[in-house]
Amino acid sequence: MGFEFVVVLLFLTTSAVIVGIALWLGRFLRPRLPSAEKASTYECGERPIGSAWFNFNPRFYLFALVFIVFDAEIALTYPAAAVARRWIAEGRAWLVVAEIVLFLAILVAALAYVWGKGELDWNRDLAGPEEMP
Image 1 (cartoon, rainbow, N blue to C red):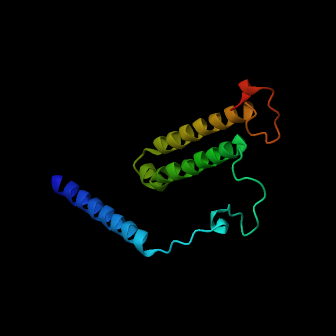
Image 2 (image 1 turned 45 degrees about the horizontal axis):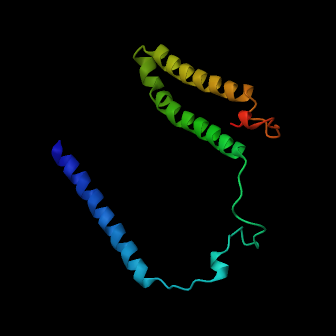
Image 3 (image 1 turned 90 degrees about the vertical axis):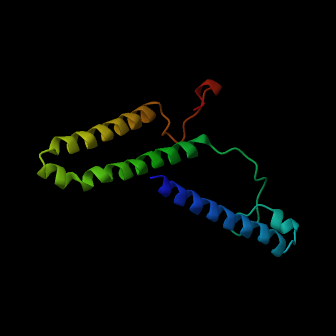
């Protein structure tokens, strides 16, 4: 069992050394031609308008987190669905159904909570700093 850990550790060390050497060599081999054009903000080939340092609306992050949660839900429900036929044949169909329903119930409760708080309303006005998400 310890041998497998040594192999993994050797692999990780070797890959870290190779990456380190590539970065070190790249420091000496790449051209250094700084210019104002290269230092400017890139906006899809268009000239930037204003400063790049501004605050994003936190709702962007909330929508991204909700997407990630439901994406992870698919990834975590798939294994139960993949073994469902075998478990049904073994007489454990209730376990598959209970697992999927419980997992989906937790996600639906979380979505209802976020929806109930009004965090999914895009044009919501904030009355004060105490309501910031």
